Length: 314
Image 1 (spheres, rainbow, N blue to C red):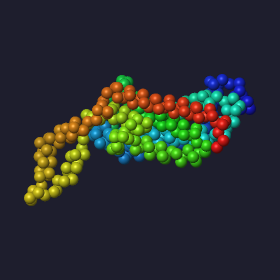
Image 2: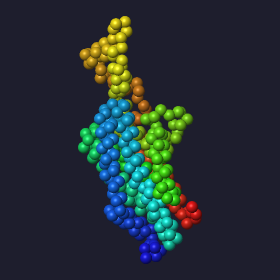
Image 3: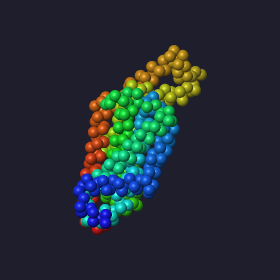
Image 4: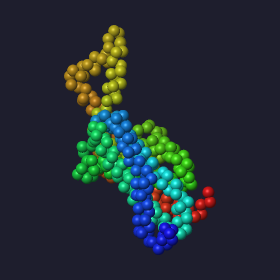
């Protein structure tokens, strides 16, 4: 009966039908489990790397990378199996009059709601774990709103990439096999966290983690933060003796006793600034634009692939 009714429904009507179906699956077939999973992941990351986020350069870079990875992980798990698990149904209903654009639109709306809830959960968990939140905004008057938009866009971009893979994959097994490879690509080509060869840097523009990490660091005013790695490295050498003396210890003690430590840490940060992570609205807007761009690309390709589902003989 549902298949026959599709012939008499326009795209909006079909979108609403499938949207209702997706929310029923959320309630009655355990799709809601992605929400507590995202809370657990956010708590683990906050516990591991949240202590120095937005406090030091190193802590901000590591924490931003971890948050971007959390968002990508959430997005991938949201939709990696959403299409391929009902591929046969989609093929049958497409022949009966299903508009693929309506089907994909329903998934886009549903996944947007999931991603929004996950972004909110991540912020709440980080706050509960006493992770320092951004205190400066670049786009809106509210720093947390800027931060939340960034987390949402990263998650949604990864979600639509997973939807693309799910649209192409014939089985859930195939989709889950591809997902770890995509995760590795997102991690390695995040741009600033790993030192990549110069010829590989253009590839970072393809990843959500690169634009997410950049946006988070930019809002956190990365370039104004102190760098502590040089000081910490020197502290490990404080017991080295040279002709019966410990010169490194003496320098460190002198700096601390004369209130020079903070100045040294800030100077270390100044000489290691990254112009790509500048605390400027233009940087944030550029990151958001790239995340939206790739989201649209993934959606368009998903529609094109599913439009050919009747010819799929795999």
